[in-house]
Length: 451
Image (cartoon, rainbow, N blue to C red; front, side, top):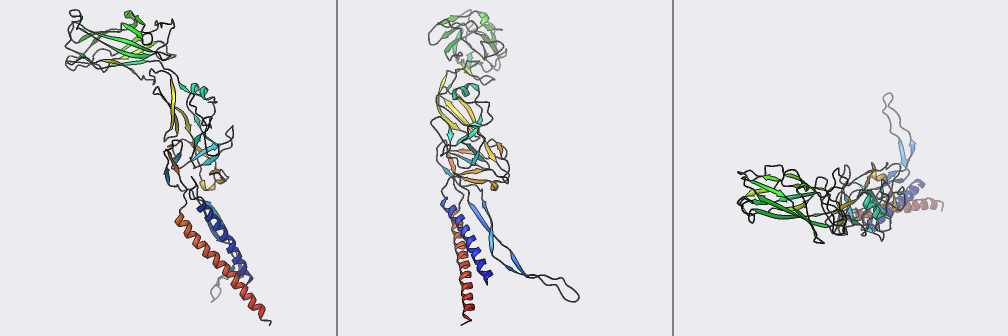
């Protein structure tokens, strides 16, 4: 009978542990990124009363006789199913829609790392992207040396705490390509005969390396030859000062003759020209740079006329500062207007000159066995020998989920399941307590036999 009493005691103890797990799950029903625990039982061990025997002669074999001696805790697993999404519209609230963990650290060398699914982040006074308790969110800097100097970070690090600043600016960028688009009126007379009506003058605005604006005069003169025009750029004007400088024909390299197909109206001559601005001097006596920095032939701008047409419609051609093959376009310097985070984890700075600069790449970690992670409080996990080493990658990459900005992952606790488990645990506890009281009554009856 004493065996049954100790079995009941083990049942009480283990059911109490299960109730502790359930209580913790229910307490964290609204905790961001919380992963519920799940406990399971297993039989402790059994005492053999009589061993088994094999069949012999005409008799059959016998099974062993065993008495169980209670139960013990099998395990407490962390269930890493994804929680429900909660929209917050806060741009620094991030949810991983799929596999992966954010990496955070309070270590300047970022060697000591923690892992979390709770993406309720914000920027601190120094521009660090941090958790609610100040741990920095880790990522890879991808913004280049210029912006790294603004931020005061070591961009050679493979991983660092994400940091931004509203004090950074987007540097001015010189123009490198002008696209001339629109139509030239085929009905115009020969310029040599009618200079007043035989020409069409338009313009294009470009930027130098300091962000100053300059106005190019684009002139098309109709020739006596059918479908042929003379193209030139006779002057350039500094918009701020109004200073105009006249250029010789050598500033427009190559032919200045433009021809069109009389049947289709499409340009037939080479549509690319090179504008040499190496001799341009500002009103302040300063030489300025144009074109792509570091190019073999500096201070040259390409002009593309490939889309211009010649139809019997009013002339509408105009030059536009365009993005060249290197992604360069003339812009003035700009100030930060805000930061956004994309679904692939890039932290993007927006500037008032229209530039959008990718500064950081948020990194995620995944594990072969997420259930092997150790909960360390504050919604953090640490790796363990049974979780394996983290695999690090980008959101939306292989094995990693996309990031949903402006949303949070809620707890994966299911209250209906927890309450059901609570009822069954309570009944199990009551049944085990009944074993103890019943065994006690039986022992009392045994003691009363002496009377």
